[in-house]
Image 1 (cartoon, rainbow, N blue to C red):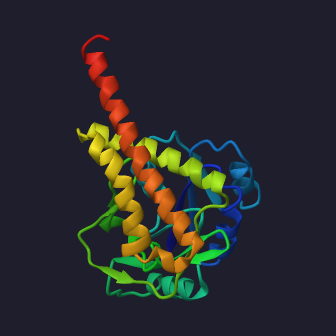
Image 2 (image 1 turned 60 degrees about the horizontal axis):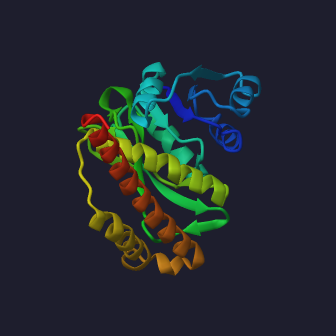
Length: 259
């Protein structure tokens, strides 16, 4: 058995070295699909890591980009990671044991996340006890075509990898806010394409409820000020995606009436 590591990237010069250095000893093939990064991502991947197979493709959405990377993988087992994710030693041993086993109990495996916000390990507010599919046999899974919040489509039961996957989410507030702006753009477009409607009441109330849900009901307050920050920015993201959806609907209606 052999393992393909698949990654999609865009301006990941500050993350990609950490991931590639950590995973090189267990990956038989490394596939990177980049969205024409403007930083040194390509230079790092192609010059420092000659074993990397580096491809470039225009970004049309996360689901499409990930499926493109998946199609480029030549091995049966796929480990699909984001550039800001790093498996610990226990997880790496678990992956190797599964890949080299002739008979595995599952064809899809989930990883438990340890989510980091800067120097803080976040344990609550929806960031703790997070599990996501990361290791799977190529023939049993593909990603949804969603532009954002894509998910793995499979009819297989999932096992659980040992160890943890360290997720280094945002390197600065500026980086975080820029991602919120990007994701809210894509989410608004996704909702618009699906014909979702919105009203002023939901635009006003939903962000308030999101803050309460994250900070109170999901115990974000136990993480202290970082927990407050996460609840506040999740509220902001909720507001942005709905107000952007409203803007798209209004512009569409104006075009229909020739205004």
